[in-house]
Length: 272
Image (cartoon, rainbow, N blue to C red; front, top):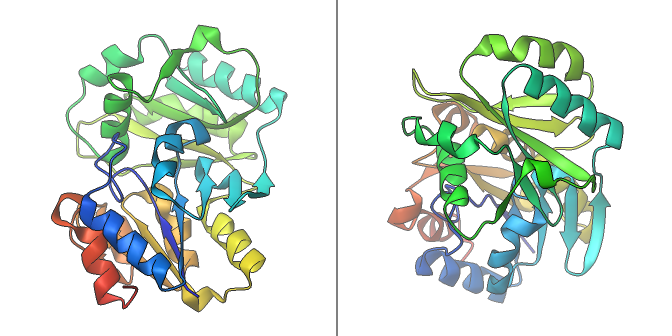
C-alpha cells in the first residue's frame, strides 16, 4: 500500500478553487482501486477543504498539520491556546499586518484585507487563494465576529519585512513563520504555524497509524508551506507552477495543475 499526500491550492486545484481537473480525479480513483490511499495535505482548515471531501479522500492533514484524520479516526488535534491566539493577533495588528484566523469550522479575516489584496500584483498560489476566497464560496467572516473558538493557524500579509521584527521576537518561540517566496515588489505573505506540528509530522502520524514505511509515501505540493511534507515523504513532487525553492527540494517536477500534472506524475511513478 502506498500513501499519497496532496496539497490543494496550486497542486490539486487552481488556487482558491474547489474542483480538481477530471484527469486528477480519475488518477486518484485509479490509485485507490490499486489499494493505495490518498490524503489531502493542506494549510486549509476543515471548513475550507470540506467541499473537496465529496471526491472520496481517505483522510486529511489539515491546518498545516494541526488536525489529522484517517478515515473517521482523528489522529491529532492541536489548536492554539487562547493566550497564544490573543498574543499573536495583538502583536500582528499592532504592526499593521493583515491576518486571517483559521478555526476548524470558520475562517476570519481583517475587514480591510480585500482592499489590500486587490492592490497587489499576482504573486503565488497562496496570494491567489486568498483573492479567490474573498470573492467565492470559501466564506471568510469579518475578524470582529471571532468568538474565541479554538484556532489552528494565522495567515499573515504585509508590505515589508520590518513589520515582522517585533512579531518574530515575541512569537517565534511558539510559532514558525513560514513565509512564501514572492516576486519583487509583491507583498510578503506566509503563515504562523505552531511549532508542535507541520505537514511532515502529519504525514508521519498517518503512516505510523497505517503501518506504512516512509519509502512508500508520496507528497505533491507547490509552495514553501509544503516543504516539511516534501522532505518527509519517500518521494516528493513539486508542480511546475510551484516555487523554485521547493523544486530544489523535490525528487520530481511535474506539469502544472492545468496541464494534468497530477495524472501525469501518478503515471510516471507507477501509482496508476
